[in-house]
Image 1 (cartoon, helix red, strand yellow):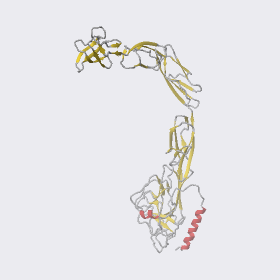
Image 2 (cartoon, helix red, strand yellow):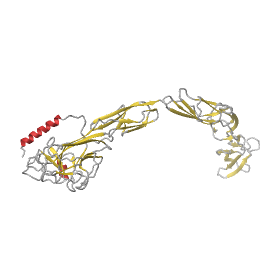
Image 3 (cartoon, rainbow, N blue to C red):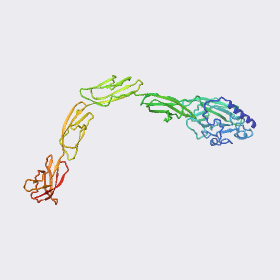
Image 4 (cartoon, rainbow, N blue to C red):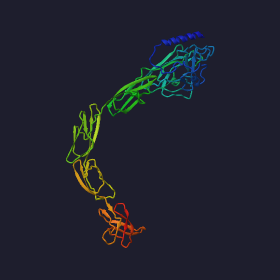
Amino acid sequence: MKKKKDRLVFAVVSALYSILLPLSNAQNLVPNPSFENLNYAPYYTSGSYIDFQNTVKDWKCPNYGTTDILSTRVDEYSIVALPQTEAFDPFFPQRDQMPRTGEVVAGIKPLRDARREYLKVKLNCPMIAGQEYYAEMFVSLADQCNRAQNNLGMYFTEQDEFEESFTMISRLPQIKESAIISDSISWTKISGTFTAQGNYQYLIIGNFDTQANTQVLDLGKNNSMDFPYYLVDDILVELRSDPTIVISGDPTLCVGSNIQLTAIGAPGIQWWDASGKQIAPSFTLNFVVQQSATVWARANYCGRILEKSEFITAFPIPVFSLGPDTILCATTSIILQAPAGVTTRSWQNSFTDEQFTVVTPGLYSLMVTSSDGCRYYDEIKISSVTNPTLELGSPIVSCKPNVSIKIPSNPYWKALWNNGSEAFELEIQSPGRYWLDIQDVCSNKVSDTLEVIIPRFYSPNLITPNGDDWNEYFEVTTTPVIPLDIQIFNSYGALVYTNSKYQNDWNASGLSGGIYFYQYQYPSCTAETGWVHVVK
């Protein structure tokens, strides 16, 4: 039986050994890689997978297997002690073994009839798909085992996995040891490199092969443990080289074009501009470029800031214009001019001349290419002119104090009234004859006149029909002269006279003198009302 002082010496030697190992700049992606961080000291082997998970930090079981935690921190008479006294439990397997480093190891039964035990841990950071990784772990067959096996492996996966059984987890591990490991004195390294096919986040350790496909060696020790039991320590997973962000896509384009850049090489890549503003929350960058600028693809991978810059070159567009839409006059032509300093020209009919002569109306266009390869397009619509027409119509009679005259407008016409106005809508406040000239841009001209009549009225308020030929009749003066529709009422409101074509001939014949009321109406005007005093 080893003494406690022997355990102390072994622990010191193990610590020194770990210090003298070559240091690596790479980061171990496995948390608690040698199981040293415990929630509390183990005091018995696992009765269930929950016992294991409650004891050690970060590590779990991917099935119902009763994985163990063994430690030098507990008394050597404990069932989980390293080393363990023979007098305590001859059935337990570890006997004189000590941790490879530190004070704690894990123990698993990779092949015991239909039962399997495994170790599972979530990596500190997801692996990067396409990157090469190195992985290793150290195992030692327990002292008291009569049997040893092969096919111990390390399986990496993107998803958290749990099998609700004690049986085998059937997977294809990226790292697998095909040799039988029977060394119970020293530690055997299982290691290898592989390329991650996904962003793996979980590691599972154990035997993933069937019993028929697993080689078992009978060691002939006649010990108490008739199945393999392995101690596991010092798990390492690291990148073979520093992760590098790689940017793909063409960073050279024309102003106004849509840029598409993709950055790969690390999870969680985002894009930023020179001001520190995030411009894309994922690994793809897609926006319309207005000017040359530098952008950055950045990712925080395991506490390390990775970044790669890309300069976007935005070439200016060769700006030109064929001019505003216009019209083509008869017997004339229009010359369209391409801009200077371009490498290619293509008119709507694929002609490449510097000028294009338009002799018929239509839609004309030009595509040009600059020396930077930037294209610009413009088009112009050339219409034929419609000869102006003008019909001001019949004379307008309006009883309003002003008259509004509106004629159809055209951007290619020019109006000129006899009063000097050039408006297509004219306000007339006095009667008279008006004329209008319309001329288009092709010098086609038409003219027309319009008479505006604004009626005027005068009615007397006294007539004296006494035969002296003076104020004999109720005479309504109108300008212009036109028969009126008139009604005359006595002071009691009774209609005493009506005529739809009044000839100014009412003299209250047969009626007595007095006050009479009248109402007459000029066509299209409001009725005029008033009174007249008849004196006889």
